[in-house]
Image (tube, rainbow, N blue to C red; front, side, top):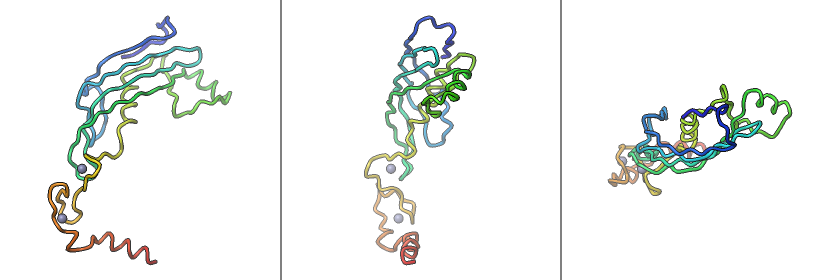
Length: 172
Ligand SMILES: [Zn+2]
Ligand SMILES: [Zn+2]
């Protein structure tokens, strides 16, 4: 999945490949890829920069932030990235061209590792919080039961002590 820019003759090439979940390390305990990841896109080589655009179609399994049940959901998005060589990067910075640092990657030895790019894009796309369903009620703060499954009635018996302290704060 490494593109050597020096060997590309055409101004643009397209790519279409499949990665296995094991090839992408998300480095996360909460999220993991479950299906093959389909990547399609194109790469356009310019004089000062290389533009990569593509679509990623994957599925992730991730823990619900409220009730901790694992939920699977599609992760399908398009991305674009800009690569410049170290030289051009420095030049353009000096010339103060409108390149947003965050959106620009630097090529090493005129090579672009598409797999690494896909990994970065997936990491950016995985939501920080996910809910198994919109109206997920989460876990009971008191007894730990999933309030989606049972109505433990703890809240009726007693006000959550954390709300108590919030009330105190509000009074001050
Ligand atoms: Zn949930
Ligand atoms: Zn409870």
